[in-house]
Length: 375
Image (cartoon, rainbow, N blue to C red; front, side, top):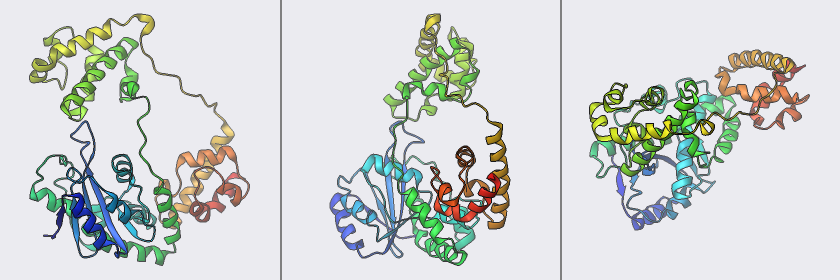
């Protein structure tokens, strides 16, 4: 069992930050509550040095300036695994933007690893096997069980040793500078509010199969679910699943019996929520024909056979380069990047590097192959 200390006050965090100031590297992870709660939030922060491990309770700490000082010093390496969501919620909830990143998932991808989960990489590189029992636990509950805390600390306890192993392999492969460029790009990740939250129902998988009247009903039952989830602070799918909403929108039940016949709508849900769900259906049925919702037309890009041909040639060149480098083709360069390169048709490495989104390491790794494919 890994020993750790729980930090439960701003003063404790201040003293901890002072003691960790000389540390050259820190492992960092966060746990959030979005799988269970409507109001997602940072619910636990794990921090590790090579020798010591800490769990920070954001519900008890008011001042995170000490943590911010530790993880925003570019002279200190901050190790995370798949930092994307951690960076977004640290920015959103604590106004912290990490610097000095070493992302073990990105590092492993540069070494040709295909199974990029932390558990897989720890097992293959350090022969460490960590449990998965609490991957989807409700980290906003209090008190956290001792078993949950023991699990949480494993997310950072091995990151310093994993950093050492992966960094050495990157140096040996001549790819450390590639990875460091990608780390700097990842440091720019920030939280962004969802666009058009009122139109979220249109983004549900299966919504496009509904007629306009069905979309009107879906809009109403989706709005009902959002409000109920907000009131109960529960993840929306825990109120009622998407397939149930789509079923209600498609079949427009008029009574409790018809409502209960829809998959996923249990007898308990029908008894507790049936009246409100049926009222939402009636609101959707009452929308005038001229006001029925529809999917907005996106910008239409005319097909260009020459561009498509260039993309295909570059895709084949990417495949050959990926095989030679033992890298996943999609990690090496994405299809969207290839499409933009095909449209801009750069004639030199300098011009290729100026295509939006293209990294220097990508130009170095397969720039000649892409330019040859374009000619």
